[in-house]
Structures are given as structure tokens and as C-alpha cells.
Amino acid sequence: MFTVNDQTNRITPIKTKSFGELGFTERKHLQEWLAHEPSALGEELLIIQKEFDGFDDTRERLDLLALDKDGNLVIIENKLDDSGRDVVWQALKYASYCASLTKLQIVEIFQQYLNRYGYKSKAEPTLQDMADASSQICEFLEAPDLDEVKLNLGNSQRLMMVAAYFRKEVTSTALWLLGQGISIQCFKVTPHALGEQLLINIDQIIPTPEAKELMIGISAKEAEEKTTEVVLKNRHTVRRAYWEHALEVFQNSDCTLYNNIRPSKDHWLAAGSGVSGCPYALIFLQKELRVELSLARSSTEENKFTFDFLKQKQETIEESFGEQLEWLRLDDKKSSRIQFTCKADGFNKEQWSAWVEWHLAQMTKFEKAFKEPLQQASEALKKQNFA
Image (tube, rainbow, N blue to C red; front, side, top):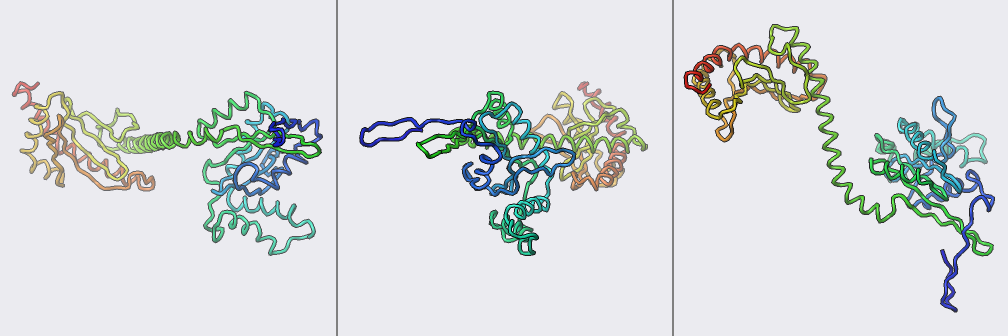
């Protein structure tokens, strides 16, 4: 930072000071400055508590707790001349503690702050005072009432670290966390002396404004990829849980097809029919259940021959099964398929028992209806020199 002398057309550096030599303390000075002027951190923030210690089984205190314009909690940790090695770990701990705070708890925390620092002239706050926390939060978030306010959703907690100097181990960790989708910012605070006047410069160094703009462009693609990845992981977990439940029921039934089959993350679970390349399959989708016979031998000709052979016995097979089936020859593909379908809210776990019973009942009938015709088709294949 420099002063400009327009008479001499020269600039002169302003002397940089340290908080230590100025006699300033973290709690009495830096914390109070930010509590009363949080916009110094580059955005509108509502300070809802300072030196917050409302954590179970710990006596730790976070410096400042705030809300941003999206209703996210912002944990602000202040250090003086040196950030210290453990500031990131400290901030992460506080974020984890705050992650479980409910809307009502946040309102209560803010009310305690207002009662302590906003109504010092009153021994007991009035009913009007007690409504202030809710009304101020609604006003800050531009919401008509508290019922429409969303606070502290999921893992939306943000971290802000303020210090005059950041160690490399701190900035390196902060940059890594930023890459993992954790909202973290580092602000460098520098005191300057200009004669008798003291100036404070606050710069955001992580992420820099330029880097932040670049990251917004990159993060759209990364967010899409991560969202897809999370959706897939969730579906894999759901499917495996469903198959575990289904296999337990199957193994206690008269249907022996799946006795040696293990649960899978896939949407299908196949079992041998006794004819090579023609498995029975249970299908579990978000909106649909199926039982099917897949004709998936190595030769297109074999698959179409088998399909046509079975199609000639359609009436007998469907009479045995008790329902009309879908016959999918799939002329543009190597394989063919015969299936029976049911619309279902597959991922609704409360209905899984019904879906498993449906799979068991349909597959039991399905196997019985196809067992003899499929063996006949296999013998016909051999006579045609397909196998």
C-alpha cells in the first residue's frame, strides 16, 4: 500500500505493522472489528454469536458464527500475526459440531447473542425482544416468516480463516479442501500506519477472485460429474440392499434358481436356466420390475432361432404362466428377450417386501412355463448344427 504525492508525482510506501507491536489482541480487537463490520470479509453476513461454546462434551469455543445470504452457517476463525499449524483442523472440528444445529437451535443461539450484546440496559428481555432473532433472520434472508427459511442444510457449512500470516501447511490444506468441494476462504489482514492513523487491509488470498471465477466455470462440470457419481453410488447401495433382501426370501422358498447367487450392485440378477447363454433374470429399476428370459448366446442366428421356436409355443407358455408376456425379438440386436413387467416405485423401501414377493411369485411361474419349451429349443438347436 502506497501514498501518492501529486506534487512530486511519486509514491511512498505506507509502513506495515504487526498486531503484536501495536498491542492488539485477537479477542478484543480483530474479533470485535469483524463482529461489527462482517462486510469486511467481502459479503453480507449476519453475526449470530461470538465465542460460541455450545458444543456437547467439549469446552472449545469458535470465534464468530454467522449466516450468509443462503442460510448457510459460516464459521469464522481469527488469528493474529500467525495462523498457527492447527487452524484448519480447528475450523473443521467446529464445522462438524455445527452441522447438526437445527433451525430452532440457530434462532436460539442468535437470540442469546442479542440478549447478551443487544439489550445490556435491560435485566430481562421483553417478549418483543425475544422475537427479534426470528425477525432479524427473516429480514436478512428476505423471507416473509421463519417457516419459509431454510438454515444449515446438509453439509453446507462454510469456513473463513482470518490471519496476518498463513503458514504453507495451512494454505496447502485449504487449497486441497477447496478442491474437495469444501467451502473455505483465507483472508490476510495487514495493519498499516499512516502517521497517527491506523489502516487495516483485508485481502482474500484463497481462493483469489480470479481463481474463484475460473473455479466457477470448472465446478459446473465437476459438480455434474460428482452428482452423477453420487447418484450411481446411491443406486448401487439401494440395489445391493434390495438383492440381499430378495435372495433371503428366495432361499426360503421352493424356487431354487438363486440359491448360489450373491447380491449385486447391478439392476439385474441372473440365474442359469440349464441352457447355455439363456439365463433367467430378475430386473429391479426405480420405476419398474421385471422377470425375463434373455436369449444371449454368442451367435445371433442361435438367438433368433431359439426365440422363433419359443414364439411358436407362445399360447402354451402364456397359458402356463397365466399372463400375456412381451416377446422382443429385437431384430437389430444380437440377443432377444421375453419378459413380464410391473410398474413399481422400486426405490421405496417401505414397499420392498411386496416387490420381493412379486419377483418370487412371477419367477416361480416363469421358470415353470419355460422349463420344458426351453429344453426343446436347445435340442432343436443341436439338430440344426448350431451347437
